[in-house]
Amino acid sequence: MSTWDQRFDTDEYVYGEEPNEFVKQQAHLFKKGMTVLAIAEGEGRNAVWLAEQGLHVEMWDYSQVGLDKATRLAERRGVTLQTRLVDLAEANWPEQAYDVVLCIYGHFPKEVKAAVFTGIERALKPGGYFVTEVYSEEQLAYGTGGPKEKALLYTTHDFSSFTDSLNTCHLFEGVVERHEGKLHQGTSAIIQYIGQKCTNAESSES
Image (cartoon, rainbow, N blue to C red):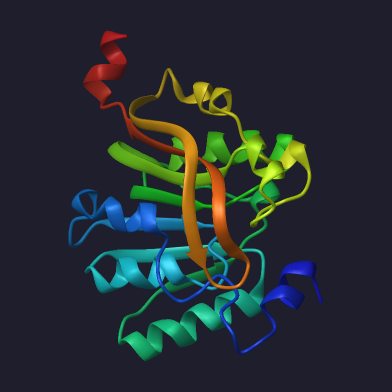
């Protein structure tokens, strides 16, 4: 059993059953009928909420236990999800398939992060949005959730790789309160990013 399977192998939803606060704050972006890919989505709290808003949601995670819990949560809420067991280090990203790619607290080694960011650029439709909230390197001082290794945390510079393909709509680094299950509890140092993929016309002008 993988580390993530072990973490999720409990009746309790260890990151809670409600969506991340930043995701809820972006409700105006999420229009009924949009296609969404939620990656590293764990037990499905954000994916299920998006499905409740009338979006078509596909969820990827490395843990089958997490995916199964997401399916059960969706069933309890009366919505459906597509779930796929995916190792993001080896993911086969479709081209221009999604209106939104969502990644909430997805923390990866440097080489995997680079592959994920390239995949997100590929998978977004022109005009589509990448929405993410992650822990910054400053989170090590708080210890209220997330990896304990600096290499797995983020700086705002990480998002500069999107400069040529996504227009930055929102970039914030700071401290917030997060109470999401037993594993995200308290004052947290985070980075939020929203980027909108350039349209074909914008790309040809640049």
